[in-house]
Image: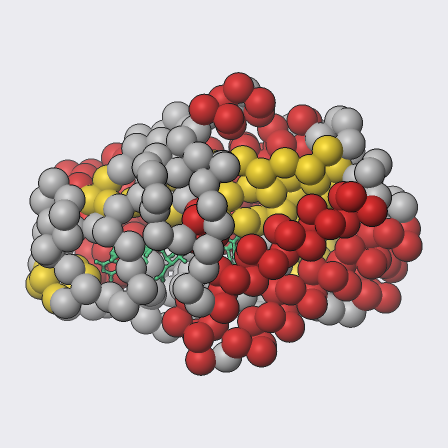
Length: 336
Ligand code: NAD
Ligand code: UD1
C-alpha cells in the first residue's frame, strides 16, 4: 500500500516507517521538521535498505497535502504530526489547537478531495483523565485537564463525526500509553530539544553525564513504592501496532484501541531496570509532585489483542537497553 505518514520524521513516526517498509508498504513522509530532522528519515532508509519519499510541508497547508496524496497515489494516511508538550500547550493553547486540531481538519479535507478513506490517528491515554477505574478500558469516560489532551479528545470526536458523514471511511484512533525505547540498531530514537520532560530521556541524559541527577516528581503517591506508575511501551511494539491497525482497516469503521503493555511500572522500577541494563548509577532526589500528574495508570489491552491480534512483547529491560544504546551512540541526537 502507498501510505502518507504525517510527522514521519518524528520519534514514533520514524519507527513506524521502519515497520511499514519492512512489511512491504511504500512510504511518503510529510513533515515540517518543527521537532525533527531529515536525518531521521535517511536513517530509516539505512535500517531497512529501502528508500522512501520525503515531502517537507505543513499539515495546515491543504494544497500541499493534496499534491502529495495525488503525486504518490496514497491509499492511507498515518497521522502523527502534532505538537506534544503538555506544559507548552497550557502556555500556548492557540498554537496547539491550530497545529493539532485545525491541522487535522485540513488533512481530512485533503483526503476527502483526493478520495483517500483510511486514516490512523495518534491519540493518547491522556484522553481518559483521572481514572474512574483501572486498567483503563476503551469505554472509560474521556476528560482532559490541558489543551494538549483536549485537542486529542476534539480530534477523536471530529474523526467520529467524519465517519458518520462518510460511512465508507476507515478510521483507527490509537491511544498510546508511554512510548519509550529506540530501534535496536541504535540509529533512531527519541531526540528531545532542550531539557526533557519525559522520564526515560531524562534518565539516559543523567547516565551519559549531561544532567547531574534525576528529579523524581513525588515519592508519596498511593502506589507500592510511592512514585508514579505508568504503562511503558517499547516504540517498536507501538510501531508494529500501526501496521496491524492498517491491516485491520480493510472494511469501513471507526474504532478506538489502547496500545500499551498492560503493565504498570513505577519511576523506581524504571530507574532500577535502567541501572541493571546500563551498568550506570542514576543519582536521584525526590521532589514535590509535578502539577497535573496522575498517581498511576495502565492499559487494558484485551481489545488490541482480540481485534488487532497485537500485543507488546518487549520488556522494560529491553526498553532501557535500547534507549541507552541510542543515547550512547548519538549523544547529540540527530545533530552531527
Ligand atoms: P515528535 O515530535 O517526535 O513527532 C511529531 C512530528 O510531527 C515531528 O517530526 C514534527 O516535526 C512533525 N510536525 C509537527 N507539527 C507539524 C505540522 N504542522 N506539519 C507537519 N509536520 C508537523 O512526536 P512523537 O512522540 O513521535 O509523537 C507523534 C504523535 O503521537 C503526536 O501526535 C503525539 O501527540 C502522539 N503521542 C505521543 C506520545 C509520546 O509519548 N511520544 C504519547 C501519546 C501520543
Ligand atoms: C506525559 C504527559 C502526557 C503524555 C505523555 C507521553 C504530563 C503531565 N503528561 O505523561 O500527557 O501523553 O507524557 O508523552 O506531562 N517523572 C519523574 N521525573 C522526570 C520525568 C518524569 O519523576 O524528570 C515521572 C512522572 O512524574 C511520571 C513518570 O515519571 O510519574 C512518567 O512521566 P513522563 O515520562 O513525563 O510521562 P507522563 O507524565 O505519564
